[in-house]
Length: 85
View (cartoon, rainbow, N blue to C red):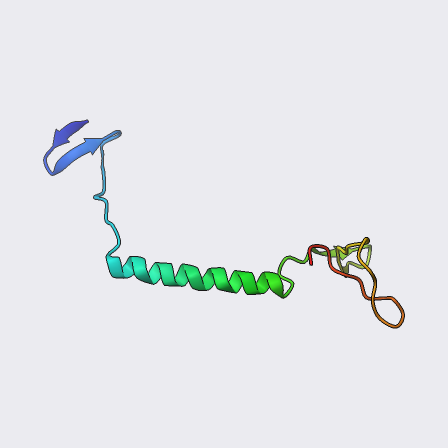
């Protein structure tokens, strides 16, 4: 490190920017936002957000991965449990 007029210079003549930390209120606001996002993620997972969606076949039909070991439902046994739920 060398010193030039205006402060220390690191590496290839670039000045290091001063480290700026967020204020307590900014940290509190970020924590509130983090908690809200975590709650939303949990809700999405409960409502099917982990479904493994794909487009299948030549016609690119919408399909999902199902749990073949789970029981089937419906009058015609055409409802399947989505894998992971």
